[in-house]
Image 1 (spheres, rainbow, N blue to C red):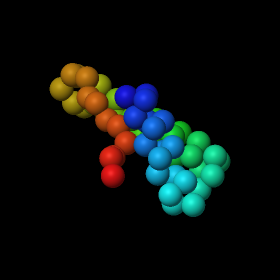
Image 2 (cartoon, rainbow, N blue to C red):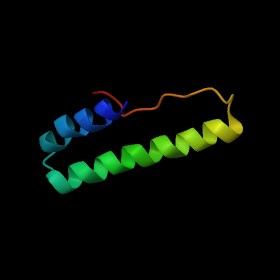
Image 3 (spheres, rainbow, N blue to C red):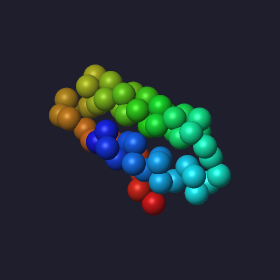
Length: 57
């Protein structure tokens, strides 16, 4: 999961005209949302591991 969290923004951000700062922002956002998803799944879900990653193009 960590690999795709880094590889997808590395491939997509330059195509959208972004630089390293935007790439870091996107990676941080994906990791933050994955953490929120983990908390929601833990307290409200089935308490099974949920896999959430960046959407693939």
